[in-house]
Length: 212
Image (cartoon, rainbow, N blue to C red):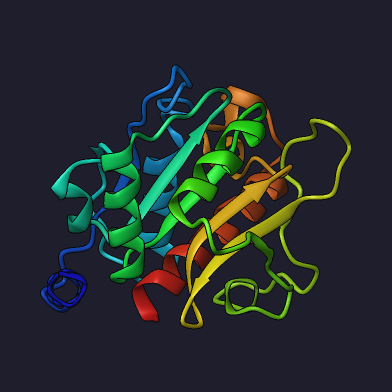
């Protein structure tokens, strides 16, 4: 099954079907937060790193077979997250077969999402991703690692990952709020340079997925 799914994803890359999706999860959390963030990130990537991603992101549920249509899936929110047994199995198969999930804590998700990640990978620990990793090296350089975009608890921004046979399959960004930086300028009134840092970091994640 894993090999079949991997081949499906690989063919998806080859035919140039570049799409990304937003994960619609259960549990009561606002999965739909930051509605302008992904469209803005897509536009930035298409303009700066020569991707050809469909401008309107799709929405996908964690238990759906449609999950395997997207090499890059984004997840955000402020509150509770619950994956049932079928969803846990489906996400695990997706990630171990070549898929990628970016989880961006929009403040308040942390205590919930860590438990759900543990359900997906009970034998894997979230590991802080070092600043020497590819996602911080290019196309845009972040020598100090994850940038700080939106202040919540005055903690340092951290990027955690789940690695599968050396491949970074899941990235969890904490105390940075990249999605806020991707939103339209008037939503959070972030300075231009802060928004650019957020978009560049997002572009690095997209680049990693489409080139590795």
